Image (cartoon, rainbow over all chains, first blue to last red; front, side, top):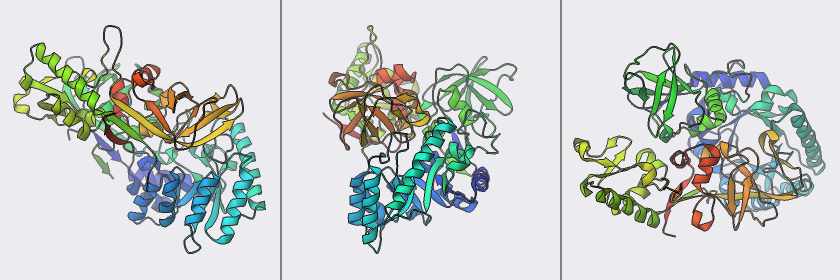
Length: 346
Length: 231
């Protein structure tokens, strides 16, 4: 094959989801599949993850939820980034809505009906300063939600937040605020049964963050959310592998047929490598559709025309390693890869 | 159903005028008009082939270098492929000045909060507000092409005011510290645009992140709607 290839290992995905599910049980896995399942392929990933023990999905957007409904996925789907005028479509497709503001609640309450109520997770901001009601806004948000629930137009099934993943103490402080917010919600008459706060980082290191569900994203794709431990240390295996063929060989360098036009991140760092078989080669330059490689230490030369270089993934550098070389994280490495590259699911 | 605003707007009128000047310059340097080839690899470096191909055709380009190679490969030796940085408006002149390309990258304010001094923002709490301030949440992230390396450094224009990205850019959202500027939910946020209009520029973002301009445009994600504008 002469073109770049994304290979998605469903065996590794299944292993990771099952590993995480057993680690956090009885908390459930609400797997994060935003952004085309972190670039891995939305529908395919959800089907495998359901078999492996995920019970619901965090989809971010209502459009993605509708795609999954159309593909026959009936599990709960949780969306939290949408325009106010998308709310009715979310209710039509039984999408769980992450709601932070009174205006959103009003629309949900106006469109939801006792026969098809809006399914709501109220968000409290516990310090990240993104979405979520502030501590001051929270009591009135809960009271309005309780009023709409009594009418039957909405059903508040969850309370949630995002943790900052700064220090364990910061996360514990945020959870303290979260528990206080849940108490206020209950005093207002709400009976949320799905409390969720932690994603991969907190879900792996803090029992207290797990609550009813953990929104595992990057860890389920086999990429560590930490600088250390590595994914391998955590018992996780890479799901995405990106490779490309050697297209040109000279006495001192070779070209590999993949570049920034395929969504491969560039960086200032000189320390950057690919693997061909069991040998390591240094990357010296990245163009739109090719990267220049040279021998590293004792790696054999010349490389064979057509040999496949692993850019990251199984048999090559990890996505988080490549992220570190580029001054970023593995999440950006996997989500940046172009959706137009040929891919196989196996 | 209207999704959140995520737009890459190509100023086709200015782009076409520029491409015609580039073509004419190549011809005056001895290239034949029949040989000019425009590099449109990687979906025209993220600009959208559908939008850019007519621009280059109208400017006098007869051939296109695509991901599959040159359209009429039998005559490859007769093609002159124009340097992509020059063609897309990112080449620097003798004074180090660039045209900053012909695109505007726009997102939407999805939440606004007034916060006290010392408020910590986004993952890792790497940023805190210096004074009481208004912060705006934008519905774009690194998956959309707002490079994470721009965290806490890149300027963002909302309305008539510039703010700075506050804390780490996440996959789908980031926060801007707007100080005392007035911001409303639904306002447009400009990641990059026209230097002449005072918008943040790709050149500046490139300098802040170390990512070349054409790599920045190529990284603009699949959720971002490409459209053309004469304005």
